[in-house]
Length: 393
Image 1: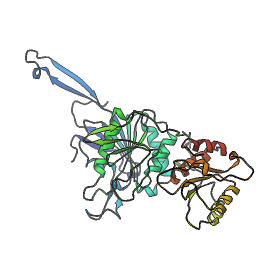
Image 2: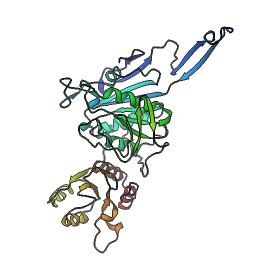
Image 3: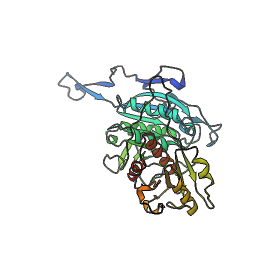
């Protein structure tokens, strides 16, 4: 339903650089977000005509818009594929239930793209937007496409210490124009989750389809259905009938290594320039041909292995001969790659090997973690130690 209790002000009409503010229309609310509610005591006790004044301070929430299916429109109400990103955060807020009693909102449109198009320049915008918001807001919500949401959430968790401030990623599986679009309810729930005191100290989360999950371990498990983030690791709770149900007390991901990034200076292009790492997908009859090609152009390689680290013996030998770190991850969604399955160089101990097990991390998250390690110029032993935090190494 439309939200008639707030006024939306556009500061800049350029979507790429625009910022918006949501102002409450309550006449007795000051600029600090404190609503003064005056209740006549005559309603309570007719013998006293004095007034009682109570003050309610609502949490301040920042929404960062990046696009995705949640901000898209299809050709018809039955269209759930082939849609285009076309809506801003301002458009999305007009379709959610009234949140004027939940929080005070400000929002900013960082970009408006399909998440497949998120590159290092957009990743820098998201990182910078979250970092700045942590200083003055009680919670942050990021609208994002589901295709690469797990990667961005993992990156933010790995590079920012958000403290007690909840950072909630949200998206949708259906465009805004479809029958039973899931975007409005997902966004409403994400705002409520970011506003709740129960969410403090839980770091980066993903809210989708009534489920609350840890952003560090979340993985998209279905390309089409609404239940697209059905995870084993990091399932934190549910949102049911305006109630937030957490199963555990506040805790941050085990083994998450925090990286300090060097940000571009004022005269540099606002973009991250991480070392290049590629992902190879193993299969039957997988040969060394691709390894020989990519090793000349990349600083690290991740291989989605068969099973829990299985590759043809010829490929293992080729990997051991290369002078760059190679992460053995997995093709399967669940499970992990243990260190015991890693091939070892002849006559050398484990510490001399350039092959590292990914543990529980997917190939795409292993790629990000290796990029961050290389960006900080970690040695092979230090990279192994970082992956050991997720039971790899």
